[in-house]
Image 1 (cartoon, one colour):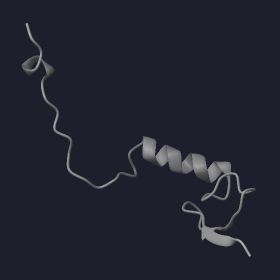
Image 2 (cartoon, one colour):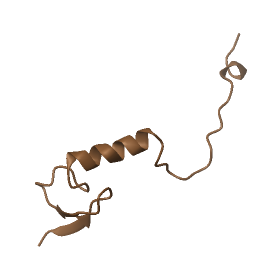
Image 3 (tube, helix red, strand yellow):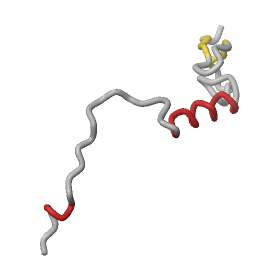
Amino acid sequence: MPTQVICPNCQQTVLWTKESAFKPFCSERCKMIDLGDWASEKHAIAGEDVQYVDQEDYLEH
């Protein structure tokens, strides 16, 4: 029997097979909702803040 996973968006059971086009999501809709959440920064990967430097300090004049 194929592995079963839970859709991260709607919690529906999804079979992990070659035919499951949107795994780990149950549908394209759930996949796109998740993508939208990342794009709107509702999701984020924990880590240190990025320190930006002024490029002028490193460019030769």
